[in-house]
Image (cartoon, rainbow, N blue to C red; front, side, top):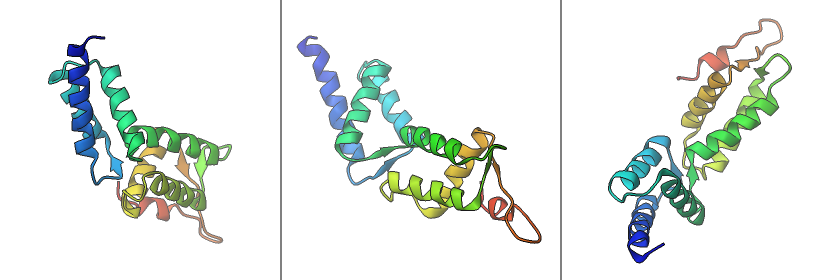
Length: 144
């Protein structure tokens, strides 16, 4: 690696640090914009840019939505019953996990929407609740 190769990497690393200041959470759109900038403006490969972004995020204790989504998917698969259903309490646990991993950078309502979207991606269904009349109203009430 020559000195001319390291200059764009250093400049992109500084841009990432600047963008991450004061944040706790970086969503997919923000991640994508930074990666596009690294490729087009700084001439880095996708792997180089991803590595720099992840390293800076880890150094600053910032959660990346892509990585957070992967761990949340695994949690949801673990919480699902044999019929691929998630109980209301388990959904609340998954939302609490998502918020904790994001460092509180995501509101409760936003975390519920994101976890619901992950459930839909995994084809998981909500388990009905109630003693007499069982319904999934708790799940439908979450705005998508």
